[in-house]
Image (cartoon, rainbow, N blue to C red; front, side):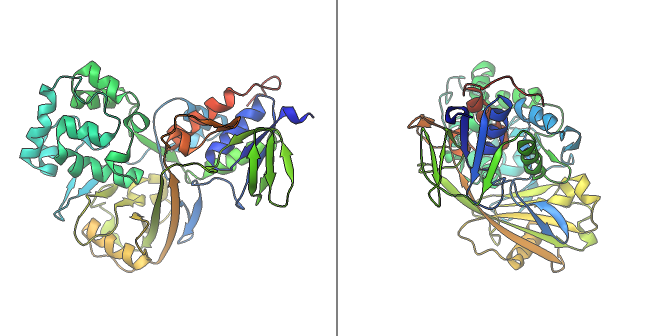
Length: 423
């Protein structure tokens, strides 16, 4: 085997696993190097009350064909599940709670004067949002962030009262930090075509696959990692965990201990990348109570910035959201997200859960706290460095629906070493 036939993938998160799989199927000899002792990055699991749950991402956006195609190849397609068709709620800045508008995208209302929009942000703010229908389609069509787009089309009240809680809870950033084209590809094009942002939202919702805009896997999204790792082993990828790359260039990498691994290099870890980083903490608690059987806040609650007497920025009622999980336990499982500077404990999660669900709850029977660092998409448009290609969140933006197609695209641009193997 010639060194020129080898590709070294640095990083064993989802992007690295997907790129390594695509490269070995294209006939390349592949070595994957991961610094930690496990694969999967932010697709991880932990046990709460004896139940294996997602510790990181627990759902993915339903868009594009690459992710469904990959799940079919991994023999996971039969386990794709959609959340229960119940609304999420908004915990408003004044401490009250209302259902999120039904026809919306990222919190952007498709019908500004709908009753649920007025209930959420008030008549005056809804009337301002309705002015979107009178503005020329060109207004804000070049806005780069969700915050700028919404503010200019529908006003600050919609941005702050509806969009900010959704974006903050789902993407861990503010609307002014979230790029439109990364989180909602085609939305600006639809704005120009439809003539208003509200109409663009409606058209995007109508064009989406039937059902919810997110999906997951029965048993947890973390199951993707084991399936990808099994394929890498089956196809002969050499996987090295616990090996830190201390230097890399276009001809190979050097790992801790001084060993040199020659070959083309794909960086699936943010080595020396100047990209924004967002730290977040996730707390999951299990409570034994019939008080939550009626799912008082649907599948979960998104929290407006500045809401009183609550520290969490979002709550997911996991057993109300996923039928497979509710069928597996009589307990109610609740997941809360926090900013990194919060000292999160199961007791704090318990207090916040009571506030956000509007119910008195018994003490948790179990709980777990996990801390993550998410890498945002960097501003530099150059996605290769010193002859090495890059994949991962810093290149594609966050979310499996962005990470996986990007990793596959980069892998397909690397010349193959022979005939593609069958799945």
